[in-house]
Image 1 (cartoon, helix red, strand yellow):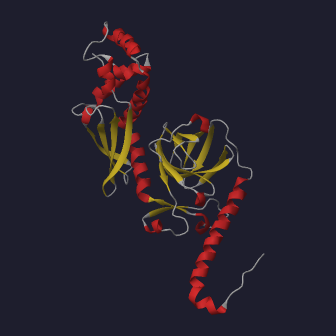
Image 2: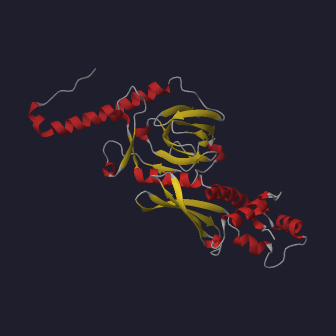
Length: 334
């Protein structure tokens, strides 16, 4: 092994800096050694596979030849917060996301806008979580889910390391924590946790169903809408219920965002995505207390203002029963 020489005359001036650089080099070397050690014998996932991840631990698998680390940061009986990254973590970003039981997210292990895995939370507890991992070939060009936050690690003492952080422990128990930690922004993590809690509520579950309904309505055409409308109303649609008016007003998606109110309270807002100012914007706001892991309030706004959960749910029940799903969101109950 090569040993560098020590210049006594420079020791007093640069001894501290030399130690810092040496420590940084050791961190990278140990991380890379851990990478190659972990890569041996790790399963290659080529189709949907169930993976169990203990809380505060990391599981490894290969997707399309890449070594992926999946860490369970926190878990409860109804939701989980996970991090995914290509190993070694020090060389790339981390994707952070929260899932309610039964929900899934399209995630990029490389931190890009194109997902390479779909992760579905099958079950969870305070001890761990079982997730279904499905490879997503790049040829499908599946975009990452809006609930996934890409966090750039503050590696080797960058300026962002001075912020409030959550430290993800070492990649393997054989390596010291200081050698392989990845520093993540606490604020982003708590926002994901708040969204996960809101998604698990009754109204959050309904919003996820509406999102799927709205996502399908871009395939609706004038002729198909007319045929669908006539089945339920006994006549072809006329102004103002014609295709041109209805298609302009019907939302195409629901976006979710969390904002800090104060302390541990966040407002999780479900906003309708629409080409019309009359139907786009915030529709439901769920106030969440992350310290209690529960929702503490719900308010309806915008297109849903003045409506009750029962009314909104009854509308969805009617629309979800329409055979032609592409135009289901276009037709309202009598």
